[in-house]
Length: 283
Ligand SMILES: [Zn+2]
Image 1 (cartoon, protein in one colour):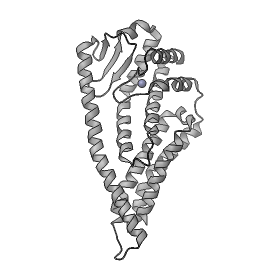
Image 2 (cartoon, rainbow, N blue to C red):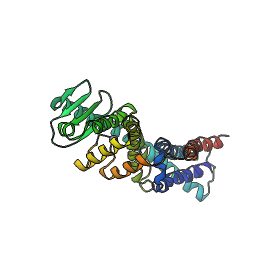
Image 3 (tube, rainbow, N blue to C red):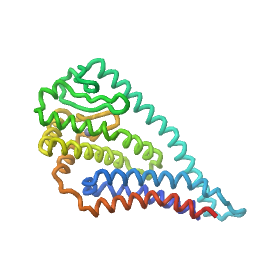
Image 4 (cartoon, protein in one colour):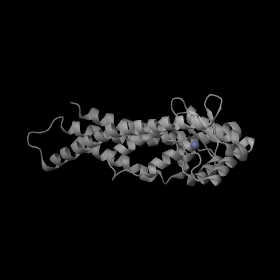
């Protein structure tokens, strides 16, 4: 029965993240790893969404007890995921955008305008972050301008610009919506922090290209020492504890090409599963 297979696949896809968060070396291929995380979540959600309708596609006149059980579980799963997707997708999006709009207005009001999108806040806390989205802002405090040497300042700006330019906020938003649509019992919240960390690693890679690993490493140390929670952005956050990991990854060897290749193969395989199973159920 295809609906049962879809449910099993969803359970399997949702259990992989419990394993993935333990494999630290995947962080050396941050872009491919991010694709895998998104693909696993998207595929699990598609399996759950389609299991219900597939179960109802051709019900037998006298179904057996296991078939009835699959029908009930699949219907509940599909309906639950659909409701979560619709409500969370709307809430997460509108909540984040409202918070950003408010934050943007605030930094425009109290910050010194440096160019079109940079704002300098009169704060004694050493901090820098970005407000992504339309009318994005790069925010830095007076204390950071005073405390950080030129090369570290350039590193911080390059890191935040990478977040804005590559729209990491959308990556996190998409993953959050998918993640919260899956059953709470099956998902792990460590997946969210892992994806947030991978986004930080991506921004670090971009900044490293411009300023080098020494300046960037020192900037990460300076900011994390200055205040737990520096580099916090609405929607883009690595967490203070991630600083040491990010510095380790700055100097880590590049991954073997096969690692990145394997990740993209896993990604493709995960995305092929739901449509393949649905195609099997079509007469
Ligand atoms: Zn960042």
